[in-house]
Length: 109
Image (cartoon, rainbow, N blue to C red):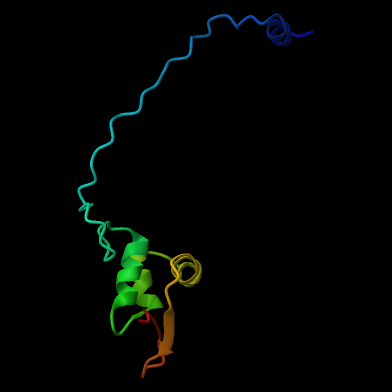
């Protein structure tokens, strides 16, 4: 039997072990970006909020424009549109190609 297993079996702490300290979390600071209005137009500056704002424009937004604003990759943007905006929020997203052949997404209705 080793020294550590003997100590564990007897229930004694290892020598020199400090007692556990209770840690407290610092008080939460108010978010200066939050307006508290709960507006759907992006009261908070989140990436999903900026995506929804871009999709609400009459012209919509391309993947390149959204990627510049959010820093996401193209497959992540398409996944957010499909999974969060369409399925979870229940919004209808229209996808069209403009005159230059660039696909644009917008929230219909």
